[in-house]
Length: 275
Image (cartoon, rainbow, N blue to C red):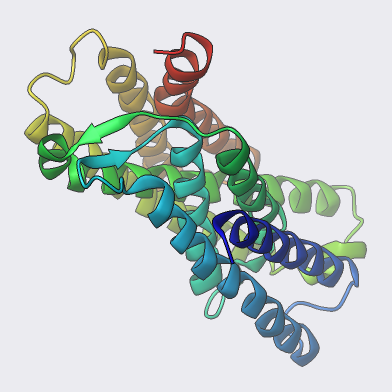
């Protein structure tokens, strides 16, 4: 099979996984029941196969045949981040109730593959640059992925909180973990995200000559703002017990700022300005 066939197959598997997870959620089975556990493992087998195929697609699209470096074009970067998020969800869901995040992220990962296939983009990072930036790039993508998961978890938490406030605990809310567990998962994701954003900023200082150069200053400033927002939220949780709507708002604000710091600039430079 050629690359197009593999891309379509992986996109279909991601989409099927997301649809099945959504169907499972809206079947209103109580969270933690034997039936939902078996369904989860069965569905995750589809997403596991999807991420394995997706990994091969990324290898083909990002690593240049000439061996001169890596292609981190806009859609390649989105596909790479969506793959890492799908991996995190699939692996973590076997031990933690994170599989519902796949309802949103698995179809997005499938869409990212299709965009990568139909709209190829080029931003070549040469080998001499890659050697110095490899660790920084990996840490940065991990930070984006964790904060994306935290943002989706915050949205689920907001919906669950709203239903419970309105005294409507039925429907698909029954299939979600308890509110306390959902909040704990959110802050665990935020804690990990904060660590990786911190490492990304540190490695940026170490591996880049000047992180406040003209073409980097917006990324640096926005990343620092996002880092600060997450840090304040974690401190507020520890010191004042912040939760609920406060946690959701701060999480989404930090996510939006972090996405703008990297993908916003890449969109403008590579897609709109064609640089």
